Image 1 (cartoon, one colour):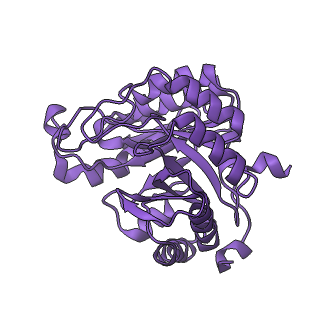
Image 2: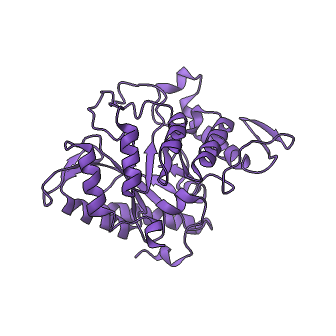
Image 3: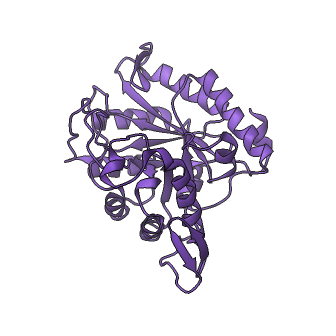
Length: 327
């Protein structure tokens, strides 16, 4: 077990954060749309809400939406198509316990006041189930459409995050390139537990020590378990050097779960095709490496989605339980 786990546990920021993240443990979430679709194709969303409800009933820790403002054909993925905050509002009403996350919102393309208000609204309407992943963005084609400069997105990312954090205070005072909060006006509603848990994605055009010091956790990319252990260790060491508290680490993972339990892995985009035996072993290695949550993406899954969700829940959730299961 990594040395970082000897330090105090993660803070109790809201219901979703506590459900998904606990030191020394790994939980499983699901990326939306919960559908199989080819590169460049539009996903069929007809059963997406029903599948989200199934994931909620089965006991997955969180649902994860993506922020894809424009359909960029060279990118090859439209995400869930719907605006993430609009869809999170629907999911807040259609689910009961599962965490509701964005992985990740492109901060430079949105005014932080709108992000803060929308996030707090989802958090209130869902009973504290909002998780906000943030990123600087990696699709240059979108920036001219919003009269934004792709080159300075890192600076705007820092300013946006600081603005969002300030707006959690009553009648905040804050000055940045996004505007001035002079203490005479307030933003309502406030997040249920005081602020929205915010997770920084990748480097977001920032130095590693800045990433480790800011936000309430880190979203990184899939790697083999040994390499991921080194990456997580480096992130947590940078956090210790910055005087930051222990923070969770999560990653995404594309899987194609085949019927044969002992099928060996074959590489696919940002993940693998394999049976349950290898997937269980890989997730266990990630847990030992210090990863606290894995968001499973079934986009390339060949088996029926409902069947796969049931198999994953039955075989893996007892071994990788949410916080509530240990209460």
